[in-house]
Amino acid sequence: MEIIQTQNLCKRYGNAMRVNRLNLKVPEGSIYGFLGPNGAGKSTTLKMILGLAHPTSGKIQVFSKPMDAHNRLSILKKVGSLIESPSYYAHLTGAENLEIVRNLRGLPASQVDEALRLVRLEEQRDKPAGHYSLGMKQRLGLAAALMGRPKLLILDEPTNGLDPSGIQEMRELIKSLPAQFGMTVLVSSHLLGEIDQMADHVGIIHQGELVFQDSLQALHTHSRHHLALRTTDNRAAMGILKGAGLSARPDGEFLQLDKLSDRDTAAAARLLVENQIGLLRIEERQKSLEDIFLELTGKAASL
Image 1: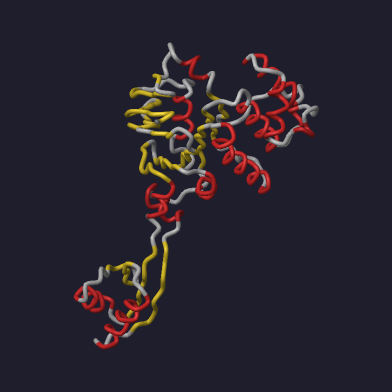
Image 2: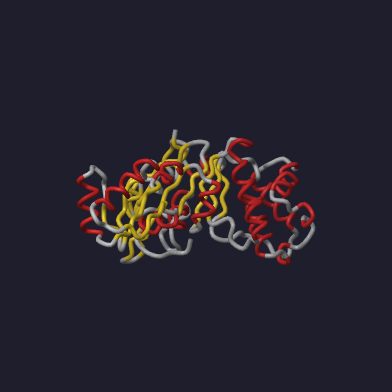
């Protein structure tokens, strides 16, 4: 079952199409990494899913219900979210900010302490939120989103402003939520390394269009190993290797071959030498996820 499903979702601002025919499928119980360069349309998409922005065209379903004026409030009762930057009253303490959220949502008093514990803000509970560091404010926003143990948690760049230890804590917390509370998590980021370490499903968006959507494991299959050869005559070497049934193809100054066993690699090298082709270099290579990301998005981006 998909907790979130969009069909040909579009959003236009003036002449700019920010989201273009997006078909998102977020499986129940997953951590879905919504990945793309800055400005790709991630935040706009999340705002439409939450009903904060109205689609130009297309459909959105959350919990198998259309996200519309009739269903929005009932859907949002089961959703927690942190979009762009956290909202808070600077003159109130962290605990007092969460108390307001608790009252608005009709939650038990224990929810404030639990939310502070989850994001490790217990010791700063009585400190004015305006005096919090950027990372602490981010964690306060996450605490507010977690109150009531929502079935769906939507996070937009949740590691922004966190130091390395804070990033690790946030990552471990997000990874624990599906098993601990049965949550589905949709988390956006422009940091491929972060998504790789926490998500099990991935959607990659570029210039408003979805260019990849599948399991993280499927994305990793694109980074399969291969061999790279550099010879004294790559053109002649390619012909010889193809004649032997190997799928050699040019790759800059090298020839690229699918990964071979040690025995087959030795046989290919021997074949070239026997045909008077000098073997200058042989390397085993693997595409990194960053390389795959750049190929999919078609440009250098912040990773």
